[in-house]
Length: 497
Image (cartoon, rainbow, N blue to C red):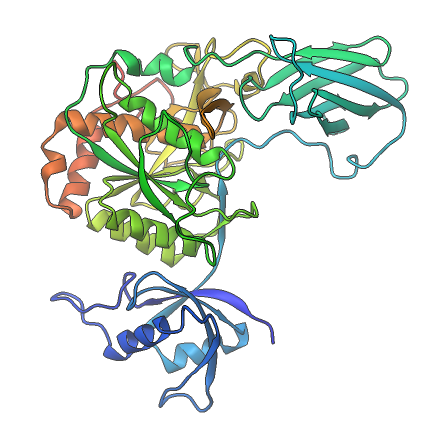
């Protein structure tokens, strides 16, 4: 029997509870509650109903709430049977979302396995002369046709690539270290013999990158209050620069307590938000909650994991949620979770996506999200670093400012923030450079958090839609145009000038 995963929801919202304004079919509440009793066993159960001629086998995998959304496994051919038996529920397919970071350059798939020509030994070192291990190298001899060779450095910083025999020039050389160094881009690299030595630029945490240029966080005045921010990502930390106070892993069949970072993306995102809390001799004013929605296998994050994470962020009292992810099909479950957050005084900042000026991805394009695009500034990354690849028109009033080449655009964009060549935290107290709307989104979230703390009164309001609306209206008054069209920047950047 073919089985697929689905999210089942009540007709409205995530939870089947009647209110003064909304009446819920008690059969739906009873149905969802009964399913909750089978989550622990994860066995296929047979559901009965007066409307069913035969028993309906459903495997219950997880539950957001006892009387709320469930993740189930069911034969797709039985969906209509379930729908007719319980007409008060919605059935949403499981879909997946991905990190909104700029992907690394890759060869054409047909080129990767070629092993003809001459072998070039490439040695990658840092300023201290030590080899940089684990760095990915992509050497294009024909960039337009994605031809060349690629590999990863050994522990002593050496990789051997096989290039065409007649080649003495690498048209574009990309080197991607995992952390500690800037990613490199060199063009028209000539080499003699079969050896090539490359020196990487070390990361200086005091370097003025895009976030530091626009937001001089270390010199901002100290804050007296705190704000809670949920980071829905690959996990967070450990890192001493991040005030991580809690969280949960919401990935199906993984330990809820394992919400530390397995990848580096979530820590980088949380580090950007946390940078807005770092002021001299002050306790961090931004409390980070980590909600890991990406599985350790490295696959995409399911809409169910995201829905559950949003629910948990609301439960933990988060005021803001950062989602540096997207790209999946629009679905009712994710929409309802974002709407539920909005109704409880929580606003969601979402990355627009990195499809080279493609349309704004979901869930950023959902009307209750705040969609954040990415920009960059010349001079905020080294000359031979990979972020130079993202420089592209249009340019702003200040011609050093540009809309990142990768940033998705459209009428749904609400605001823009620095997202090119951003220095931030990596697990185990290291630092890394990343680019993407994934980085712009937390820059906007972090500045919003700081502005709301300073404003003060809105955060004291009851957690409902009035508070969400008040936060968004207030933040709207703090936006300033950089001179791009609205489809690129929305209404501008927060808190500058």
